[in-house]
Length: 456
Image (cartoon, rainbow, N blue to C red; front, top):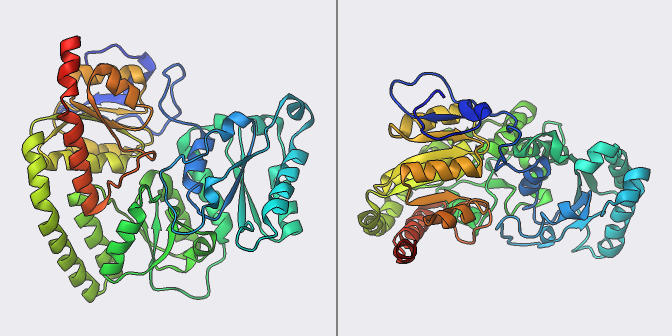
């Protein structure tokens, strides 16, 4: 074991866990396939592709695979729409044993025909794009979904885009790449003849309306949003994305690959930002304004930040007085979010004692080490066993994670904060920072934990 963590873990997992210290050298192992037998919290390739593409409000989705895969559809993100609600529907080819033997291409073709027959006659409901997801069993039997999609495009004169996402091909990160390839397919690979002075907002999925809050910030400082990829996005605006002059990337784990591809294909530079927490929200707004380089926008941004801080700081002071000294454990999807959460807890006077991610990269973990206290456990692609052991060892008062981690926190008798895509309240921006502090206070200082202690 290369750190002082006093728990038993799988030998193959030892390099994925460190206990932060000044003396410790070496880097955390990350961005690898999950260790077999460790019951990783990561999801499959199809999951990663679907969560990225699902918030496109006027897109149709066909899950080419068993009906069980299609269960991962309805409201998988708390993404809201200001227009179409098409994305809330999902379709499946319901592949069964006979289809496995004889192939499912005809069934997929029939599914596309059925969608066009049912929705194609109404101009308002007619499909503008259909995404076709190849799941595990399709990867095994070898259906040529690209040929089926091309034939459907010729037949109906719409975009039908294959998403190669068999689950066994990797993990959620590979699904993000599959989704990014599908988005490039939708945009086309040709450089635009003209540019629009404005930005593309990559990697915000409009959870609980956060995209509306953040685009309103950008509007107030004088910036035009050309496209939203993918929260509250539409097929038409995404096809306009190559014309923008700057990409801002909120969810680095899912969208950095797309930003790099767009820089290569369309000469659009990008910057990584985060709107979680006061510190990162202020920093991100200034970085965007400085990247645009307009003096008037920079001045407006400074004034906007000042006004917002004057509004929220008194509210945050109340929660700081109630949360000072509490201990937090973090396990989220991407490294950028984890970094922002550590800063938020620091701002509230709390101590982060454990932090991990599903898809963090080497540079993310270096930053996490730099801003974490000595003794903080840092881990990549963990499993429930490790989470439980480290939470108990470090005496965490709250676990911040997603829906899969909630039962574990409650079983251990500690507070929980859902920071994943199922939540229904905004946590981004200045308003989100107050909402986050309020939720942390409500759950940590709930009297229920004292009752549980008495029972135990």
